Amino acid sequence: MSDILVTGAGGFIGHHLVKLLKAEGHKVRGVDIKEPGYEATAADEFMVLDLRRWENCLKATAGAEQVYALAADMGGMGFISANHSLILHNNALINLHTLEAARENGVGRYFYSSSACIYPEYRQEETTSAPLKEEDAYPAQPQDAYGWEKLVTELLCEYYTHDYALPTRVARFHNIYGPLGTWDGGREKAPAAMCRKVALAEDGTSIEVWGDGEQTRSFCYIDDCVEGIHRIMQCDYDKPLNLGSEEMVSINELAGIVIGISGKKLDLVHVDGPQGVRGRNSDNGLCRETLGWAPGVTLEDGLSRTYQWVKAQAEAGHDGSI
Ligand code: NAD
Image (cartoon, rainbow, N blue to C red; front, side):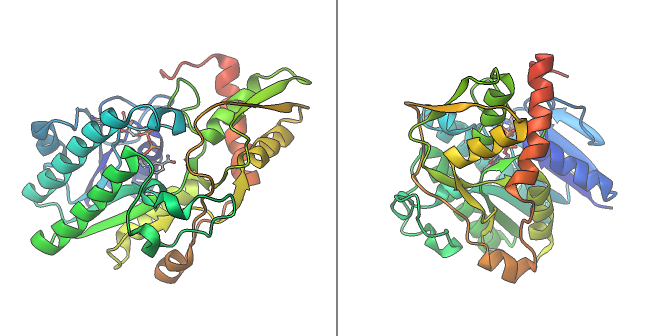
């Protein structure tokens, strides 16, 4: 079995991906600036390294046959909309250095985790905006620095394939959620934040929702995400593919589902807050055609599993250290 490097292995998706790769019998090295927060890594080897630094990227990629590049300085809308410079600076360094180090160390295949945030703002101005196809990415107009950096790294992957014959695969994740993801502290995303608010709320009271709550999204469960990553890495198609669900809901509906799961009676109070684009959904046509597969876990099912985990964390007062 080949030697695989997963960067961002201390984070949410990277940690789950390491588990999947280990279950398939691969030898896995995890790298991150921190260890996983909620459970020990399953990786054979875990290196704590800052991948903004060139020499660390050389160490991380040495001997790897395949690289899954998931390391990024990121968070939910609250973090992304308030840290443009930090995000562009740190993630550009991580991605430029990791890909070049992979080339120098003779890596055989490289996976890059892009995002639905690369899609242009002008295609996402209505709550009912059409589901996004891969070809909709251009003319480019991502909303935030986070999306611009992802788009440039997508191009970098394409050029490395063309110029250096380094095979690359790119997935555009659409709002991944599930157990073992950040649920408090400011970097959490809407599903985990909603689960936390509902879990901590007294029955008969209310929870806060940013904006009018009519903004729409689709949310993809972590098991579908890691399976999709693995399938994309193995397929022959080398252009970006959506990796998301097509089950679009408003944030008010998302809150309603979580409240229903909790069995509590809670009202929604709408407050000022960053909302991101008005409406976004994934078009999985190309994903289905290419992989013969698409994410299938329902939002109700995925949120039930996520709510139980977040509730247990919140009740235990867990602070993110093992
Ligand atoms: P995460 O924040 O849980 O994981 C990212 C990891 O990268 C963290 O553990 C972090 O410590 C690590 N990292 C940050 N700076 C680093 C550095 N300088 N050196 C080494 N490691 C560093 O996020 P995630 O949800 O697991 O996301 C994984 C990847 O998927 C990221 O590239 C992210 O941009 C992308 N993505 C995620 C989503 C989502 O909904 N979760 C959506 C679109 C794209």
